[in-house]
Amino acid sequence: MKAARRLIIDTDPGQDDAVALLAALASPEELDILAITSVAGNVPLELTTKNCLALVELARRPEVPVYRGSIRPMVKKLVTAEYVHGPTGLDGSGLDDPELQAADGHAVDRMIDILMGAGDGEITVCTLGPLTNVGMAIAREPRVVPKIGELVMMGGGFFEGGNTTPAAEFNMFVDPHAAHIVFSSGVPIVMMPLDVTHKAFTDADRLRQFADLGTRAGASVAGMLDFYDRYDMEKFGAQGAPLHDPTVIAYLLAQELFSGKHVHVAIETSSPLTEGMTVVDWWGVTGMEPNALVMREIDADGFFDLLVERIGRL
Image 1 (cartoon, helix red, strand yellow):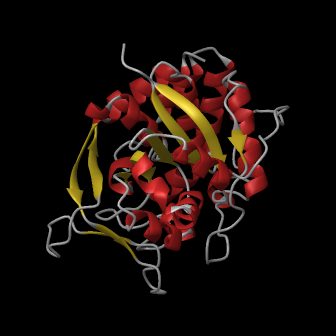
Image 2 (cartoon, helix red, strand yellow):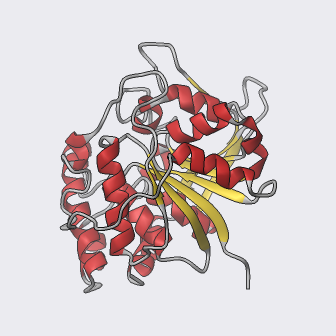
Image 3 (cartoon, rainbow, N blue to C red):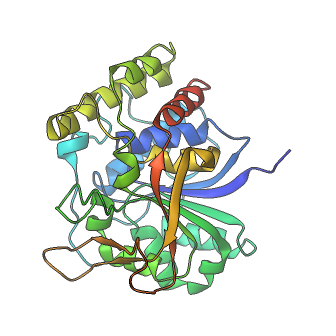
């Protein structure tokens, strides 16, 4: 039997982050979650930390530690997204305040400790929010870079443009300076951009599959996504919303659902017009060495089938 992949999940829940976390927590045979690290993003840090703890409780995985991370981006003021996720970040979930407490220590310190205690390439880092914690860890201790076998992230966009500004996706816009550090570091990156997530929309039938699980987790996911969908349904004029962050966990569980291309990606940090843009050299016109596997296609039906199956285990 193949050993479970050892990973750190860095996140800012957010309803779509919540689905990703629950799918990961439901997959202990494949994913050995060493730590969940919270970061400010969709909502402020105290709420993202609380939401991580509530989701660990919902999954009945209290042994998985949650560490409180960076309260703001490296350079910019924090931008949040309550207009999408509601004031709690998990509106619609029906979850109570968690009894679990965050583990002692700062997320960046713990991330460095875990990576420095591992062999080269042994740890996968999954990022579902702004890259602040990872950027801070690399800046403080560059020796962590070879320890990361793969950094699988949701963020950016190219053919689809941005969802926060015309040029920038939310996670990249919140902390472009951290993203620049990560993409310049040499860490092997798998990038799930809007170009993929905008091909994996929820709809009434897909939400019903979660509700029909007849479990607390299924009902919570259905409630969260029903709330979350309303913003993007109005924005896109569609019957559902793109489900962004679970693509990261789906990739770890079923890489065959995705296809993409190794290309060079640069992050704009200074232009007022395009700050946070992921400049993807899809056609290789710069001649720069590829630094990311950028996904562009997804089997949406297979993706949702996988999520329903995993959430159904909880």
